[in-house]
Length: 210
Image (tube, rainbow, N blue to C red; front, top):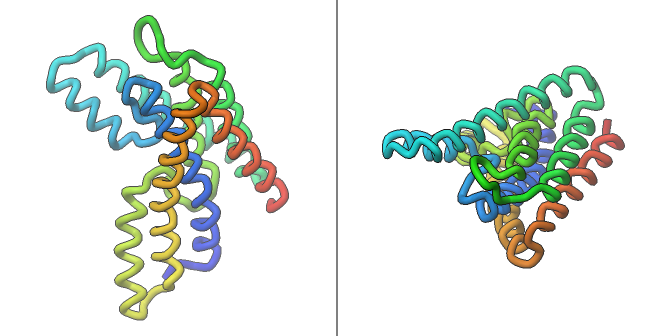
């Protein structure tokens, strides 16, 4: 049975999932169909590019995975150094990186567009914002945890809130992605300003909750 603290952290992750979905949708639309937070999809595309002998595309996708991992490492290191201020510190960095991405070109003359070098590490770091949450943008895991928690609750062996929060995480990703696509259509390059502001607000809220 999930403990109350773990369930609370899962609920705190839901708005962060929405931010990740928003940035991922904007990235997909602006960066030549690249996922910036969904590394399972990026890794699959990498395998396809290798199999189809598209070395340039494979190299771009490999760099995306490396940038995400780098962001996660930085997020983990910052989280360890910041202690009780972990969430606020990591979210502040995420907000700054997304804000930088808003100012960088989304099309490059060769190789990965400059915007990706800011937003991809931001998404890697985002996953380390909350302790005890195994990846904020890994919504495939949310669906499997939803199924497991639902069956446990129906069997009387778990909290109903455990499956509700996993369903909410999936819904948050869809809502965030929908919002990102809508913002991209209407704001273009400036669309990233909205998730950057959302991450900054979340960082301030985390300070108050610390």
